[in-house]
Image 1 (cartoon, helix red, strand yellow):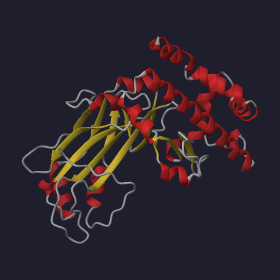
Image 2 (cartoon, rainbow, N blue to C red):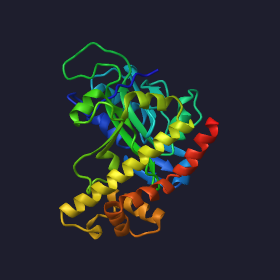
Image 3 (tube, rainbow, N blue to C red):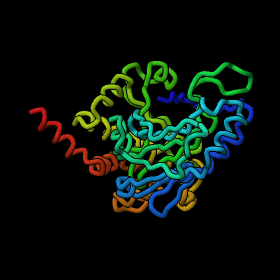
Image 4 (spheres, rainbow, N blue to C red):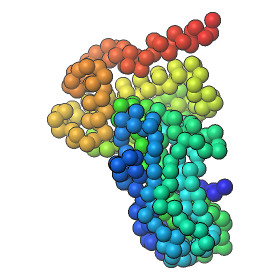
Length: 323
């Protein structure tokens, strides 16, 4: 199994990786007749459930071998991998891997399916919040260290990621562990369970998950991940979604007001506009009415969100199960 090392940000102090990056950038994600480049891929929820995604590689084995040689990494110590990560659960699955050798033909198309040998795939591809598909050229084993040459197993020579998410979903924010260190950093009380951190650039972000981080107590998050389908887990997820939408709506309103802007000033392609538009559609109101309700009638807004996220039904199921 290929070791893939997690990197918090891309740092490329390596020589000769330009060819690898160019080859990975050729990749196209397909579903039917539609094609998508790396980055956000926002689709109707039913379309994501249908699946039938394909990766078109647009590369030949001899090109991959040449790219490895240019990076001074032995081709047979390198793999071309495709892996997928759940958006809301900390689950991942390996979709495809192939060693870079000259005795095997490289596929033109890689099917993205939800039936793999490991049981984790069902958590990834059945996640209603969507998933990530990453294509990468990765060092597959530890190599003798050389200056400016990738040598550690799991190091990416190049990679690209498709961020697939439903346009009608508000649960695209994967919870991160809320540790004691973070509580201290955010000036939170010791026993606080959740925190929503909203960064800069909220109105300009195309993908709100890039500027919004949802935190959940570490122990609670670990228990939640043990059985996401449990009724108690659903209640936690629902309440966290409501809390996130409330915080996000207030933050958008505050930034608009602070900058002296109105709804018409929001770019239609921005994440904030999509977020508010969907919320308004669900509430059968216009966007300005939603913002006014969130700021002037927060309790009413909360009740609307409870109805939107079916809190009543989930709570009834939990209590019935406890009898």
